[in-house]
Image 1 (cartoon, one colour):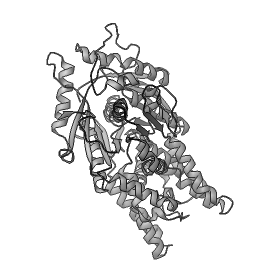
Image 2 (cartoon, helix red, strand yellow):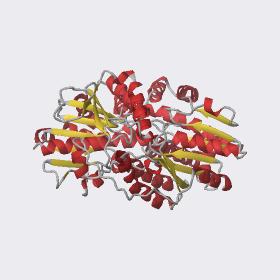
Image 3 (spheres, rainbow, N blue to C red):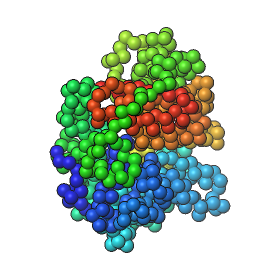
Image 4 (cartoon, rainbow, N blue to C red):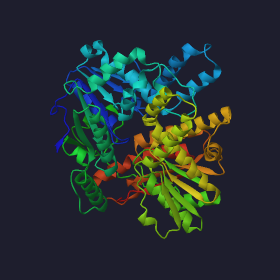
Length: 570
């Protein structure tokens, strides 16, 4: 495996960096852009990541049109805001019909355009303008995207009804096809964008991962999914690799062994992809000077006066508070890979040890719950089998629709049921049934990564509005769900993060979204803290020094309701 260096890679005109949240794709995309600009090339860097912190990295205000970077001649950065783009896209679809269609139809259109799929399509809408613009192609040597379109987005665009301007007012079930309505005018632009993505002479997909099992699996899924859609020119970059073992230091040795084991167990789908690595750096990649040297060197600067964090709660104290306050529904939420499953499992174990009747479950498709380890703990467990709940939901929709729809309508519904969002809705229904168990036992829920979780919350509100509007055939568990989630005496969200920039920034956004949804969050857990270990490795001590800023930020966000957990071998 070679080190990632921009002068060793056959760089195409368009470069797309993608990967699981927190793996460093933004840092590597920025380092590539700065390195190429420093060689005298003209570079356009575009972020479509809703969790983007490019303004912090470049130290200046950025917008969706393009800003020249003062410290990097030749580099222009575009920071697209998918939420703003979604709001504009939603209004562009609905505006022509206001005053011309009944209020019920307008409301239904707004409902269909309120979900996470709309954000994805709006982002692709913006992004397609840059990848198809002839003037941009001639002006810049390379156009770099931080976050590629997902397979989910591209699959939606391939459904035939994506190009229909028809929005059904039927109540047979929700889908993502409404988000695609009104795109006929842009069909050729989208077609050209997808064609460019799949042209290996023009485009390279850079899969970014850390040397850990979960992000490697995510990279393999992305690789396979995008390959099926014709995006085959791929390279893999392993970020934050510890280059050597230090047997004298337990933490270093355990970290090195964990990384090597993950690489040895790399999914088969990644083994034939050209792979590079970027070494673990002792500094936080938080500004241009550090990003500029990311691919080059590490200047070790450890603050020997750094003190371990103080005045924080243990996880045991957090659980005591949950029990004392009588919480019945407890979520662990945060970015993928921050340790939500571990924290959820430990909370469930400790509550059971205190005599509580506990049900532990996961809504995460990856499902990392260790069922064998929980035997004898007095805890009931479940998981959502996506294939099973999806098929059950499809059959329910078909059964309901057949009684009132023509063959032509049924054909549309069958296509609707093949859309990616149908699975999300089916999982949501199962999720509501699990939360309903809180009548009899404490339900601890290991949720999916943040974007998936927020989709569930969006769906919760959508269903709740549907109940209020139609008083229709909605399951009782769904009717009760949002009021229960909004009851701070009953529900608690424990936000889990790492002492690093991206997980903390995304957790901050999650907290804001929860507040908008009226859902209570008191406790935060900062997981895997090197600052609490006794490492004597100067390199890892320098990493630990950098945690202080993020731990202090979490203290502020949580009003000092913070639990910090020491780095441990998984």
